[in-house]
Image 1 (tube, rainbow, N blue to C red):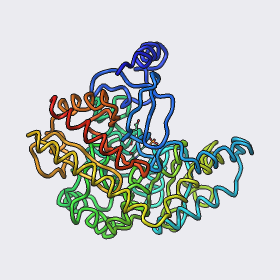
Image 2 (cartoon, rainbow, N blue to C red; image 1 turned 180 degrees about the vertical axis):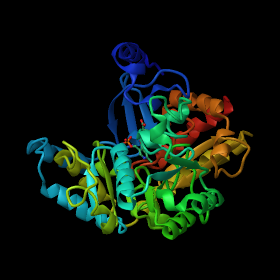
Image 3 (tube, helix red, strand yellow; image 1 turned 90 degrees about the horizontal axis):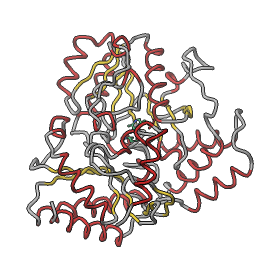
Image 4 (cartoon, rainbow, N blue to C red; image 1 turned 180 degrees about the horizontal axis):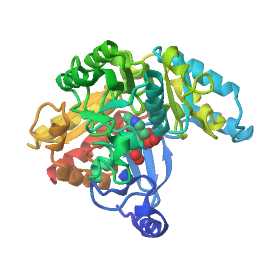
Length: 428
Ligand SMILES: Cc1ncc(COP(=O)(O)O)c(C=O)c1O
Ligand SMILES: N[C@H](C=O)CCC(=O)O
């Protein structure tokens, strides 16, 4: 498979774009080789600049749950564009979006639209601090909540891939109030709350960690977060930027039956356009400006084109059986990969939740913690990634990112992926 156009573009890109990419994890540093430049996408497929076709399991990092270029979404965007790109004033589409989101995620009485997941988590933290009058926040190692200064501590995703989980440029004073604990460790949480419960404004968590590969919560972990926040008056924030509408129609909170005070959303809620949102209990949300004193704003927030894409996407998710079908596809893929790896005698483990999944090169049979993720063979993942790429399958270019299946992936796409994996495992 020739990728000369991508190679040429990457050489050119590095002149005026730092590292040749506009988001670090795209740079292939974790897997080696040249980033692929794409020019078109349709259903489960991406087409690169040399017109090679790939079965895509990145889905623009999660938003494309319907597959790429879904006709309903495209037409909704075209209709919205015909009426103008941005008004900087309220629209009916925003009201419809707020009604729909609050219906689909019942813990949200109110929602504020923003432009990215990062903005959503940044505002959620500010709001929790403003609401409680406290400063300390708890996050978990390997969880990523966007590039918010106070949350870039032991962070996952590109920060972990590039070996800078705690970024230079973030003043120490900004992270002094961030306490970092081990994911899935309810005992550690109990200790911290016992010692400093009165100081803690919020606990923020990815209810399924998707930025250190894919690590579902262990039994009782999310429940413990709820319990300690209740006992000590802290705000529980579920960062569902990735898991929202991905692991279940109502997000991870519906799947695991634990209700947060605040939820952050992004990715799917924008249907492929740049969007984020935060919402939750009325008592907390009422502290947000202009109702309350906690300031937040955005020139393009609630953008009508983005609302059109998001609404058209969310409406599709209401179809009966959608999530059962999505989960079955994900299971066929992960079970198939595990079987083929076993037949090839390769230590391999998979995880999944709804339409997201994790792949690990390891002899371990259970992955629940950050140190277990780090003990896996990331170099071997890189070799596997490139072998799959050469066979027309596009996985996330990092051993620390979750993969995503869309409703557009059919049996033939998954079979083609498993056939490619059979060859790739044999070549390892
Ligand atoms: C769980 C989580 N939170 C927050 C973010 C930040 O979102 P964005 O990249 O849209 O700023 C991401 C993804 O990047 C994410 O996966
Ligand atoms: N893991 C990130 C988001 O979920 C990947 C997107 C990015 O940072 O480019």
